[in-house]
Length: 86
Length: 154
Image 1: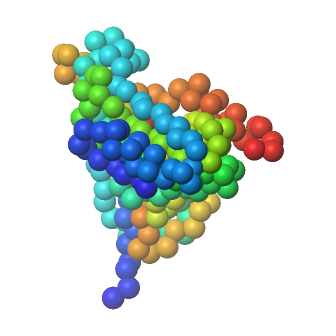
Image 2: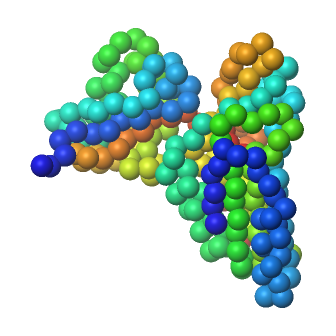
């Protein structure tokens, strides 16, 4: 059976403030990262504000992505703050 | 080789492994990052390092591959800890072996600078009172990474 959902992941401060680390979204109507971001922002003020931050980084299938990066069913899309390792 | 681990970081065997490349190589340069007692706030007792399993390794590999395009390097070892880290413990190790020291020095610094701005790790500072604050990315780290893209001919 073909995969019909998209795996969404959140990390670090974003994960804590949104209160969720991962979930699945139906792939219907989603063609790029922007579609997911806009859909998530409709969940409320906290989501709208946190995901509106220009500093939020995005990845598709574990590679850095942009708003217009295409997303297909079965893909993994992640949102996270600027990195602070090392 | 790239390793992400929650256990204590022993640098000696990794350094010894790089030196085993001699006499094919004439230089080994390494950087060890430690958890300082003073972070962005006072009273920091430990750190908590979160990462994105899979993407973190891929991102570091990308940085190592880029270093191999820019410098003549023989081997690279990157070890990064995740999870809880006490003040004074090692967080990260980058080691590079090459025929000549200049390549090893520059590649080591490049890998460390790029790792700090590209590899998905996030650091939280835990105080004695048990409070935790996520560390903000520093402008100086972004500058350090940008330096390499501004200098032509490397």
